[in-house]
Length: 159
Image 1 (cartoon, rainbow, N blue to C red):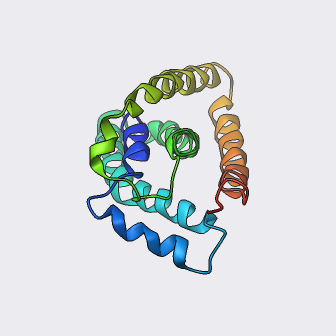
Image 2: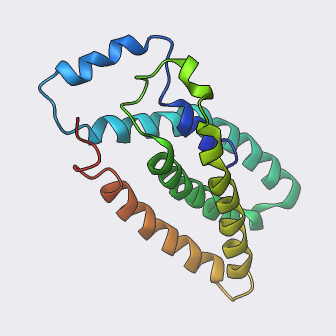
């Protein structure tokens, strides 16, 4: 999960940032689908492959009893990705040059790094109750369903 804030931050930048004018020239005013698609693509292409490999190693080491914990961690990572994206993305994805990436954007990532500990603590608390991990997973599913629907609201995702 520690790579998610950095990936979210870097979604602002591109080597071909001048091509972002297309989004402003197009007759589309609601860019929510662009933001949602960008985040989903980043998760699927950059996060999930590594997570699957790490999960297979954990299942190999600890057996199938670790699978609910891996599912809960994945759901927490999706929720965390939404929070990070909302926190750090300030412009149309890929619309700023890499040279502006060094303008203090990294300091905004510190609170997000601390949030990983909060997710871990809640996960640990849920393991102290019978079937607590399943309740935690249900809560994360509900948060993800609502989050993916409402994080990219029209007021935020408008040119």
